[in-house]
Image (cartoon, rainbow, N blue to C red):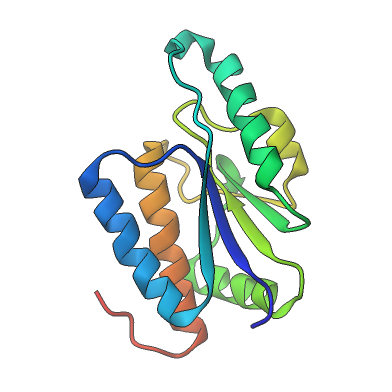
Length: 156
């Protein structure tokens, strides 16, 4: 594996239970591959009705941290994959020199200009989940994919 793996999302996960789950999967991922989580600026102090403004503020912060990576944006309308297909996709991505960045949005989602930069838009499910649950689900699927790629037993 030569490509780097990065995960970007706005804001820190403040709920300790969700944060513990994220750290649980990050520890497991990092035993199998280098992985960096980048928590960017979160729009705060705005009403839910200002979702367009929230997305723009968070997009500006995300853009500052995006590199020349292959960008995968999370969206409920994106491409779906089985865990095995995702493992094959991730194996290909990690074998290339260009890094891979997963980009998740905050509670309002991602701004259109971030989605337009995506090389792939990926759906974890056609259902809508909280951004905290999406973070954990993404990390779990990355861990699962790495265990499939390396022929290791999935440890619960």
